[in-house]
Image (cartoon, rainbow, N blue to C red; front, side):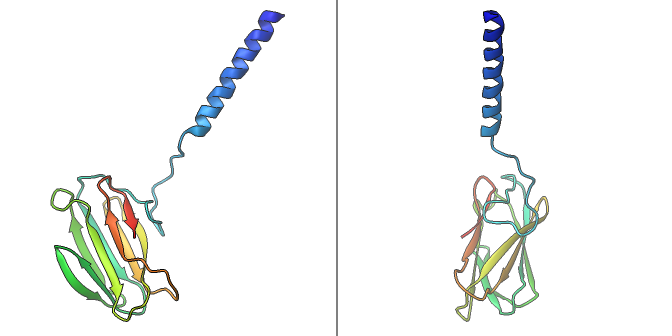
Length: 143
């Protein structure tokens, strides 16, 4: 009886430990493709990617990607497409702002594995986003 009780405790303890370990593992989520938040998209460092910046708002938006692209105005419905690679420019950033001092927001998407879509628009209120940056580990952040 004691032997059976002891083995029951051991098995139960092992199962409880296994369950606790499995619950502590980070969840693996499907890659975000539409309406992604800051940090939800990650590219493989070293891969060449295409960045599409689209003005989906109703006001012109200015943008710049130093040192490759100087200040440009992106009118409603227009797209600027840039090719990026980590070998030529680590941690690429694109800065954007409104000429009329309106807030600007960015909505991220990943329509293909090597394409970042950035939809910029003027929301009705603050706060305002200022840039997107691709970090050294490939994660995309809105700042």
